[in-house]
Every structure is written in C-alpha cells, then in structure tokens.
Image (cartoon, rainbow, N blue to C red; front, side, top):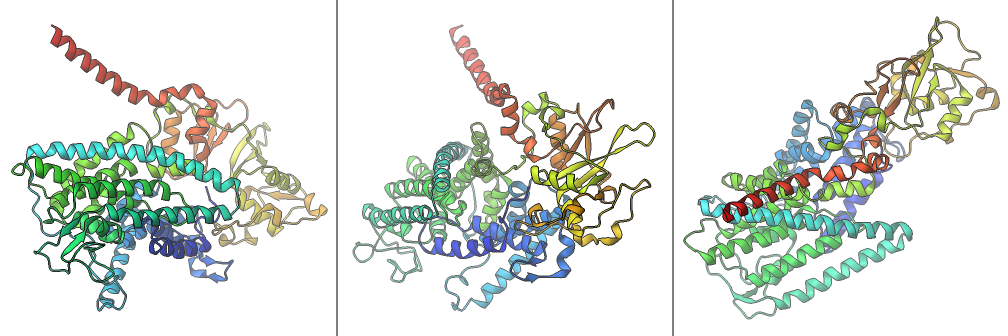
Length: 628
C-alpha cells in the first residue's frame, strides 16, 4: 500500500522544522519518532531519484524505482533515524528488524548496518568539530549518551523479586497507557476530521498551556535539599543548563522537583540513571514527576505536532524504577546490591517493553545508551516479563496507531483463527479481469470505476476456447500504455505484438512519492477509444499463486514472507473460471476478516481464556489439597 505524501519532501520539511519547534518549545515529546520518519523520508526521496515536483532529480537513482529496493532503502532510513536519535547503531538495525518492516531479508542486515555505521561516523566527526562549544550542547559528551560509568552489577537471588515486580508494573502501566491513549487518539482524530485546520492550532495551544502550567506550578511542591559535597559541578546551578536548580531555595540548597522539570529530557534521564547519588530525590518528588510525565505523555502523543514517545516513556519508567530502588535500600540496606540508578534503567526498560512490546531492540538500545553490559541479564528479564503481560491484554502503542490510521500492517505471525479459514473465504468478490487483447474503451472504463492495483489477464485456448489465466498486469503499467498510445486498429490473430520496443524499462518504474499518474490525466479521443491494446508483452506471466483450498494462515505466511502485494488464488479443480480471486494486504487485516465472519471474534481471546482457566484449575487443585 502506498500512503499519499507520507514520505514526500514536504513531509520531511514539516517533520524537521516541526520537531525542532516542538522539542525546543517545551512540549513534552521526544525526538525519536520524528527522526525515524525523517530518515525514511530521505531514503524514499533518494529511492525515487529526487522530487520532480520541486525539480530535484538524479537520473542515476532511477534504477531504484521498484517496490523491493524502495522498501530496503526506507528500512535503512528508519534504522539510521534511530541511530541518530540515540547514537545506537546496532539498536537501530534491530529496531528496523523488530518494529519497522513487516518482512525481512538477510541482505538487509548489512545494508542497514552500513547506514547506521555511517550515521555514527558522521555524528562522531560532528561532535569532534563542535567540541570547543561552538555548537551549543551538541558537542558535549560522546556516542554514549547516558554513561552510568564502570559500575559492577552484583545482585542476589532475593533481588530478582523486585526486578520481576518492575516487569509486572511496566506491563500493567503499558497496557493502561495503550488503552487510555487509544481512547484519547480516537477523540483527537474525530476532532481533527470534523473541524477545520484552526482546531489543530488551538489543540496544540491548549496542550502547550497545560504543559507550561504544570512546569511553573509543580516545582512549588518540591523540597529544598542540601547540595552534596562530593560532586564536581556547581550546586545550585547558576547557568541555564545544569542538574541542580535552586528555585526559591536558600544558598547551598537545590529544589529536587525543579531540577527535573526545568531540565531538558536528555538531562532528566541522565539524572535518573546516575549512580552513586543516593537521596538526591525524595519519594514525593519522584512520584509527582512520574504522574506528571505519565499524564503529559498521554495527552501530548497524538497532537498535530511531530512527536516521539520513546523519551517520555523512558522518563516515566525511570521514575518508578528509582522509587523501587529507594524502597529496597530503606527496607534492607544490607540486602540490596543494586544502585538506585540501575533500578531506574530497569524501570525504563519495563515501561518501554510494556508499552511498545519490543524486546531485543530496546535491550540493545539501552545497553548502548548506558555503556554497561553487566546489566544485560536483568534487562532481558524485565523486558520479557513486561512484554508478556502486555500482550495478554492489548496491542502495543505503535500497532494501535497503525490500526487507527487504517494502514494494513502485517504482524509477524498469523492469528489462530486464520487456521479455520481457506484462502477463497476472504477473497473479494469484485474480481475484474481483462482479455489479452483488450479494447481501449474497456480498459479506461475499468480504471475509472475501480481502484484495483492489479488485474488478471485472461487468454482463450485456441483449440478448446476455454479461458486460461495468463498473468497479472498492474494499474500503473496500464496507465503507461494508455499514455504511450501504441494502439492496434484490430485484434491481431498471430502471437503477441512486438510493442515492447516502444517503451523502456524506466517507463514502468515505480512512481515517486505523491499522487503519481491517474486515469484523469489521460485524454483520449473517440477514435482511440475504439482501438485495442495488446497486454501480453507487458503481463507478469509468473505471479505467485496458491490454490483456493489452502489455509489462510499458510497463505498469510507466503504473502508476508515474500513481501508480496498480490497473491493470486486459483481453483484446485480446473472446471470453470481459471482464477478465484486476488489476496492483498487488506484481505489479511483483522477487521476485514471479522466483518465477514463475526463468530470468530470470540476465538481471538481463546489464548487468554486458556491461561485463565489453567490458573483456576491450579487454584482449585490447591484448595482441594488443603481441604483433604
């Protein structure tokens, strides 16, 4: 599916300047989402050879105008965006593998890795150039953003309990976030659709006012804490940037809540992840900041500004993770070996896993961010627990957005209810076919009254006159043939005409971002409408096909594994028409299937019902043992 203008140059400019404005304007958002989208836009523009609309084009890139190469480029662009946002090249590759693309090839690994490695080299070179402070805060630090230092991670068996509790909390918080944010997004979509563009400006203004009011009012609830003596930086901070904000506190003291609210998101994460900073924040401060972060992330994500969700979720998880570390220290100082900052890292991982339902990519990104490999086992445990709990109840926040937008994104595995259906059960009934030599009038009429992207081409056997499935021709190819006007005056009686000499391969290349060519742009006179087109030289005579009795789950695996746009369904017994239908992405979408077969809705919850029934049986068995 091609979403109009989703990766165009106009979208890229809006994302770049919009994200700069939203982040610098104080709106509670992150930069990861806009950078991923920006990287995909750059890759899509390169893949189409530039932008003809803005007279920017490169002929040497015209060979990338096909579905497979453009998908590869866009995937590499998304991986480069993550690498630029978090300076995590390996995490960017795994993010593209786990979340961005719906199908993966082995050759994509080294291509995406090359793109992210190039991003790391460019970032490191730029930081070295800006190390003198001429670029503001950009040149400070290295590729490790939240370096927690060379800290040994020693933990006892008893500490696995609070780590597991962190995973449970992250899964529950992630489920709640997805549920509440889904309802808020539906309200936002209805509000923006039913009103003009001014409502979007008003919407952003209201969210900005709420964020500003909280930023100004909440620091008054903070406590004044005496500055620590074992630090190298100034306390309280006298400059604009710093970790210790004074805010109505006496000399030698800082306001812990103001130190979190008045700082940028990157520095907030760094403060929460910092080790060896016991009692830097109070319980009340962390709880207030966690609630504020959670609430602002809910109402901000979905506003008509470029916004990311990774940093707000990370900050929220780090807040309750640090609270857990403080509780462990207070309950049994000799029992806890983990630092409060390490608990904050695990809390961030738990909320990220519960809301985004990613495991490997988040784990590697956090390791690259913190530069501490010893935290790997606990991070893996927390992510697995939070993701497992979240998957029991609802989708991830990203999958929910895709469903709300109506984009046909295919998950890794088919749903269980697809095993009970056949391929022909979900095929659309409005199958439109074309003859091998078709009249121009019928082709134009077919393109005007349908929005299909491909059409089966049918030929007749010369002896039996039975219809035979010849292949598949795309809508874009038909438009190129109509625009070329290489028509025939009559139906040829010999083999396929040699019409391919009039066209070049680049003429049938995939159009770039934007609307592309449409049947409305082609004007034909009445004489041309009475002529014919020989479709045989331009038909794909070997499309991927399955029989109509194949299980829908197997057809799903073939469709997704090969990265197809069309999968032809042919009858197992050739007694009638040679093709039964065409499967596209929309035919595998849950809403489309459940609309046809509403009795399958209950089957969706079968895994959860099985888990709950198993738990009940265990509890009943334990009660029976106690009674006996």
